[in-house]
Length: 320
Image (tube, rainbow, N blue to C red; front, side, top):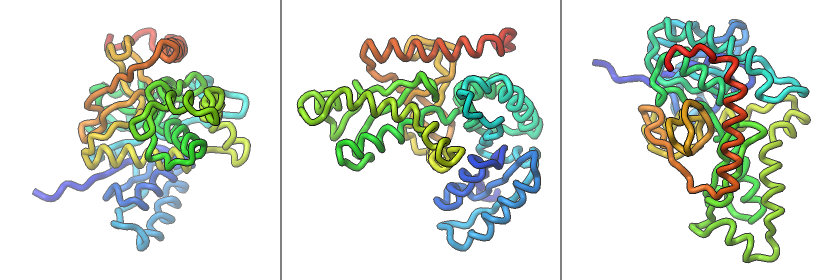
């Protein structure tokens, strides 16, 4: 029996998909990377470009442009195919178009015999992850959305800048929708084990209003990037690579991904960004943060927004 080779298939070789592939190569995470796109020339060009840099990677991966048949032996299929969001739209307003796209993609992937893990990044990611789970028939643990992984990274970066501390020394999460109703769970955040709110309230130079501004800056970060360069892809590409590494290397690390709630936080039948233990099986456990009342109310509101947006799309659910 030959050695297992980790294969990642990326459906959608646009800004996000190609940047994700670039991050995978630079970090030596996957041994095989296949790019699939309706624009075959673009996928072929990306594969060529990545292969030209293979000499400079920690462990050269086999990279090629392929088709859905290549998903059969993939450990992870990442769905990044989507309709681009315009400046006038929110992540939630493109839901119908992207649900139709993901249905077609998932049906083709599953027809290949795929039996791995879906990693979803197409927006609105919480709803599209739910759609992927619904259309694929896979167990909920093996359908994961990028969720609030990037939002959390943005939060920790800004907190690090504010306190002049390496963000890797700060523990905290953005939870809820990857979008405008997300929640910064400051009540559970810590620096070196000390509650963040205790640090703020005990230091006259640090104010609670500053934390509110940081939370708003995190929420609006994508819009600020779009204003300047037209799209966001570096940060999310690296976030996807981090999730992929956690899966392929069976890390059992906690990351804030879009996960299916089945009673956690008091909610059922919804995908939303929450901390979860990630390993080779996908999501092995959801971590329930001890939120304060205000944060719990905001999470309830965020989930209700997602559910009301989803309702017209899944009136006749096959698995309920």
